[in-house]
Image (cartoon, rainbow, N blue to C red; front, side):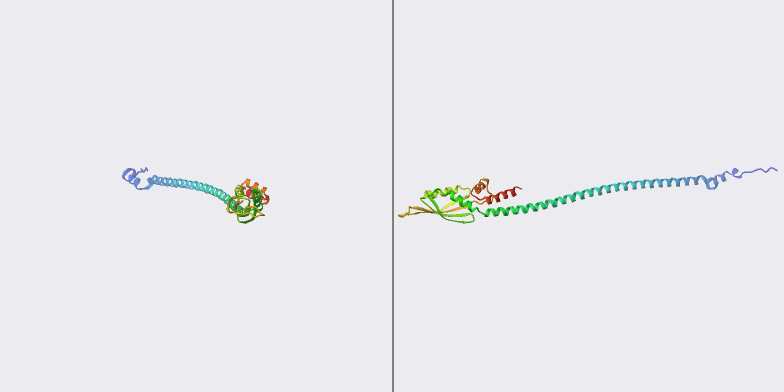
Length: 235
């Protein structure tokens, strides 16, 4: 016997509509949309993480290269500083040596200034006597001052002697301290006694002409010392 199949849902549209809205087999599309949203969120998270990691490694590499550059620059500057310090130490040593040489030179100059070539001075005074009409009876010296006492036949000869002494490179000044006439006797002629004070030139810094005169007067050792002093000062 034939039994007719009756679809009650089809006959009741309100039931079908409620089923579609409330659940059942019709809810499958909503579940697929949620999974798709989660997949999208996970994909975005992975992309953001990848970008962040890439940025981190980029800056990490940049910082590393900058640090290596700074270290190399520091090493270079340390080397230059070490070289500069070594040069400074060398220059300080040279400065001390130069100061020592200068001190020794000044001491040598002071010594030469205090030493007078008396043999050359006496020879110079002898050569400055104007002929046989003037003679010397006594000479005394103290430092750079020489006192001369003597006699002459007349006053003009004493004056000539004074002028010839002033014309000498060995003499810086000469002063007539005394001059008096001595009456003659049956055995002697009238004469004049005199006293001179002569200041002798120091030889701390002699000029070439004075050096030649020292050599001509026999002060060979002193002239050699002067030459050594000039060589030291020239260096």
